[in-house]
Image 1 (cartoon, rainbow, N blue to C red):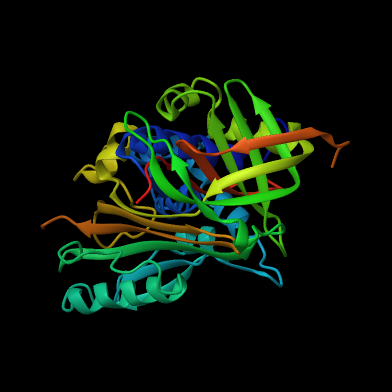
Image 2: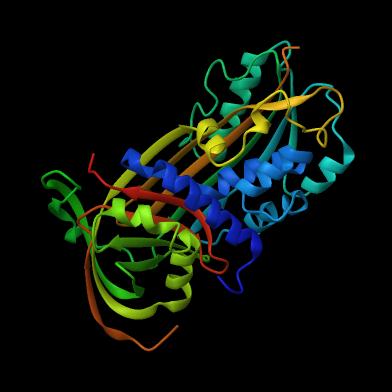
Length: 374
């Protein structure tokens, strides 16, 4: 992705890695940007092998690059018809001293809240969940489950991403009707299918078609990627083909504006993940053990990551899209525009990949797949 910022390439590559691990689970949605933001905050305070493993998983050259992606996410601005929020919060144990260098790296992109994990962990958990719910208009609730935060917790890093946007080209509601959708390895299922005819960015890639649906009032859009064959095969070859970043780059820079006759399901997907095992599979191991080195955060107590939690939601309809995601990283101490092309018809009636992307940078905010009508 020549010309694309390093932090955007990194988040796209990291998103590809996560997607490949989650793709076998059916309908999926998650926010690469949210997960990466929470882990970048952790990386800012990591040292030694702990930092090296986190940086490698995040596709960053070094620990010093941790804060760059936070600034990239914070730079996205809402518009008149587009609500976009991406707050980062550091929830610190009361009286835990934090190194000035750690706070300086995150200055301007992270707010700090104090709570008493040591004596009132349940109250702290409820405060974190209430804040995330408010930041996501009530779409992400119960991010931190009971038992995740306890008297050994000293720090929780959270990121929330919320989007509520109207399509530039809205789907006429009168044209929505039930049509068959064809999941892999099963018969057809009746699904509410929307219909639109509009001038859209369209790209014919190798073994897939993709179309870009822009939102009003900003630089965000949804990419819909329909493989020629099974979606499972596209997911399997995605990393080898340059990942989500290369796919989005092809659509953003190599698409032609076409008159697209588009049929697309109206869909809603929710998902929640405990990402500890996934991150360990991606090479982040030391951070979860007693050998973790987060001495760049505090010298008061040795910290390790006790849990990485993520929830996401997307609702796509005729008027636009509402999407939300949140990530929590809990730390514990030891127990101790071109010429139009010919018209294109695209009927998305089988499993497909989707991404909500910042079109100026290519940053993937949400990534997922729709495989089975619910």
